[in-house]
Length: 204
Image (cartoon, rainbow, N blue to C red):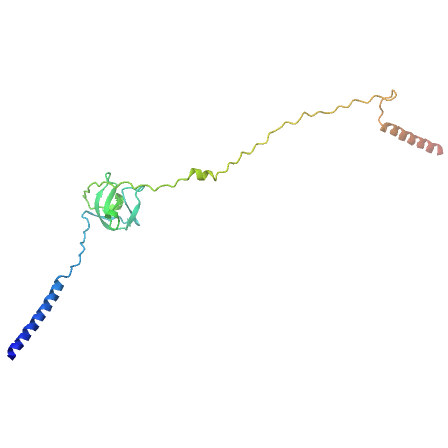
């Protein structure tokens, strides 16, 4: 009787332990596995090397300097995969991580390619839309335009004709012609000198 009771307790304990271990194992098996990111490899292509005689080489968004902006630089001696070339062969498309599409364009003279490299022709991206130039509202600008009347130039008025007065000689008074006033004084002075000289001679 005692053995039977002991065996029953032992069986119950064993079932309890096995049930707990099963739940634990089931919980472990049901844990979700984390998403493992996939690693994308670098595009295959011939490896080009930046020339050494330039401080830095501009990487642009397209094959041209006028409309395509600079998106990065290459340092001297940097190696990059070359994906293709422009139609004329003046520009090379390279793999350049971190920019839209992970591609950029470099002028061909700045990249040294392995001898005998044959690159496919790559269509360039569309020309970026130019920035909108702000226009001036003509109505608003007209409010700040002040019409300055032109200054009237002075006009030249010729002077009136100069009229020189003329004097008619005065007629003689009492039939005697006009005698300068200094002549009688000179005559009287001469007579006085002669009279004084005559008186001095007589007194001597």
